[in-house]
Length: 348
Picture 1 (spheres, rainbow, N blue to C red):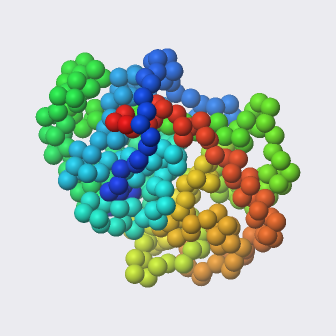
Picture 2 (picture 1 turned 90 degrees about the vertical axis):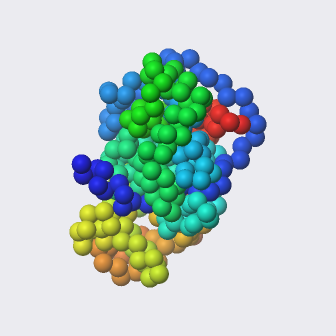
């Protein structure tokens, strides 16, 4: 199948260091609180759980697998090692992913939320279905460097996982489909829609201050073509004019498709939670939002396939404009989401 052939060529970001959180009691939630959410005014999601029934037991299994180091060859790395809840499941202060044995990847760990609206995954869109996405980091030699057969063997040998699979599926058979669907359910429930911006839009008593309001209007005129509301991304592949690093020469989408016109194109990230998900760009080259805006305010590198929206020149921002846009972007942080105990590591 095409999706399985492509998945071996992608870079998914995981790392060697586990997320450190304060000890806490994980409060299990009633099953009626686990449900598909489509906020008012949002488009229909791409993934609908129609063949992956939402249950508390499957969610708990998926959460345990997300934070499970047995998924890696040396049993040291989990998905949660690189996708940390306190930064919206991005990787705090790491420009690129760290794999087993201290190996370094070439791409920055993307944040994880609102995944059921995504048409593809990874910076190059190399995975086109959420239910097979976890296979990518497991098999990547720079990341987890494991194979699914070994993972299933390790999980099957665990009394803990035999019970979790039995609770979720009615018997203790450990299969890749069951594993991936449980993980997809857990990640698919990561809805982020309760930022200050959302409360303002819903007329829930919040309002932008003057700078945030100016920043929002600037955003609509300067940024919204690619970072489209309400998801703050169009999820398209674009070349945004950042310079190519010769030693890496990451070809982006072309690495997957082999199409020359896809060279140096990467998936447009969502700007939700952007104030806490740095470093920025596909390779983590920028550490601040100020640097990101400076990039768009400076003549672009003459790379092939520069996005047509940028070929007319810089977006022209004053220092005050940049301050206002950054202040607006801070209103996109969803503190409820990043503090939701349902998504925390159950081992702490």
